[in-house]
Length: 246
Length: 223
Image 1 (cartoon, helix red, strand yellow):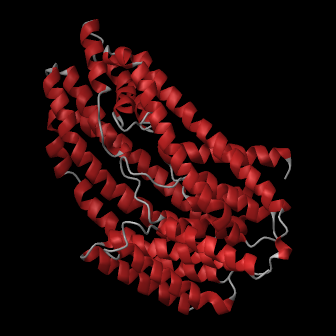
Image 2: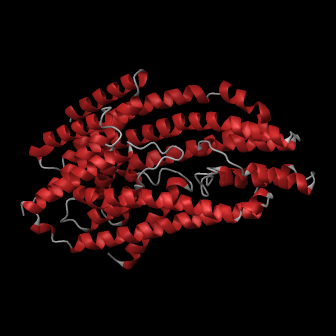
Image 3: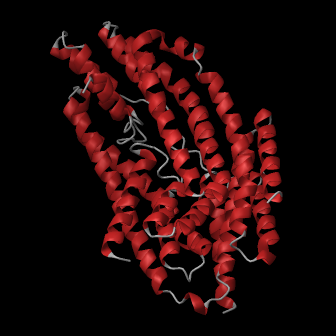
């Protein structure tokens, strides 16, 4: 197995040792290790150990884009860039890779695919779910490999290469698609689920759902009212009603 | 529930738990995916989809960013879906609320504990990590994965116990139990709507959200 492929596979588990102190640092070091071993084979043992230690320091980014930093750092180590500069490169990449990845994946691709899947379930059943999983994983692997290759190609210049790339524009597009897909999913999912609830309570369910959404958004209540808390309170209240009317 | 099915469901709970954060983050831990597969394993995909859609509405409210704390819906959805598939006399959506929501919150708490344990593990190997010992880094990754799988084993065991309890519960003695299902759906709608409006912001995304909702309403009304 090539060092690049090993790094890609390891990037799939980049958050396995995630902590509040180092965040993805250990995972990034683990993914960089085969590439460092391959590219720094001609350097001294001390230089290799120092590079591995640097690669496992604190790092925070979106997990799918951590490969950009891994590639850039490996390229910089290979070119003999001073350690202090490499640490500054990692620090500089943390924010943009986190923000771009969150916009593209967590606020874009994932809700878009899940929303479209929810909207399609009444017509296509489990196939809609399977398609969402397959598309997500193909895109996830492609993004991971693209990021690693971009980093390896650009090295210290990876920040500007990232800005020039398709990523910032597609992150915006993905969020718009996600907004559309979630909007589409809410009425379809409500209709799908309410078919399983007694017809005379369907309007009450929608009204209570709307009230919960307002509470989750209102400045006075939004710090305390989350969806899951609101749902749990409703479940407990309904249990009391069910128990009382037995 | 046969021992083989119990083992398969338990294994699926471990897979979806590890998928959430550790590896490979491939959507398997999403409630609609975890519940569909669990429903399929238990012989009733429709029940799995119903539970999955209900819990997915809650998960749409979550942005799993950085150090944020959030519920872990994977094993919770799988357990609730399997219960719905195996206990047909129980209302499926009530099981989503009774098993899925509490187990998801418990799962979120175990994730926090797991992260604290990972930090302790790093502290024990700090000297070796700062010396650039690749083996120490590999050990941390391996232990992190094992610990997260252990989290899945615990959540799966609790989920399986909940399925057994659901099977033994006298559902027929509580004829209005559907009300709990209605409450679960209402909470899910509140979560999805609130989350969508919050992340929709003020500009173009909110317009796209409105277009999506209008399209969804048209789809529903045309049925």
